[in-house]
Length: 220
Image (cartoon, rainbow, N blue to C red; front, side):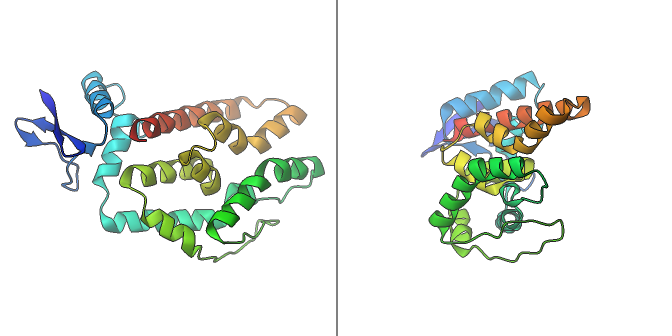
């Protein structure tokens, strides 16, 4: 039987009077009792143990992080940021580009203002960028393990660090995040019709985003 105990402001899990730990030997903990109770429920049900984006596995991922792994995640996020989905404008359709300017540019401008940076729009498949984004790197270094996991997982899925940033700061919800991530596909779908294979991909994407959103709801 697994028990929940409160240590200062965190909740830990005890089995046979021993703290449950991650693969790296870190103690498994959460910040809210409801989160802890949901972990126990998922553990007992077993149905979500194989889903990498389930509450229990995202919690394990977070608690398992070492300092060097966090540094790698930060560097990966900075790399993704330079090639953010919102920056791509290499399309022939003027209507689509105008739609992107309307929907994406306000987020880009706000991000630039917040972190004192300036992005380069991407108009070609062949593109190189090496912006350092020092202010954003400092911001990332101050995130706790749960928030940086949320940002990393969402950015990896959506290919947009910018949108994922606004999600974890509660400026957009997961439905808006999904809609903006799929803006180009939705535009093409209206022009050329539905592609069955893409529908399955979209179903998996919205499911994963929804699961990560549920994780974020329980850590914030």
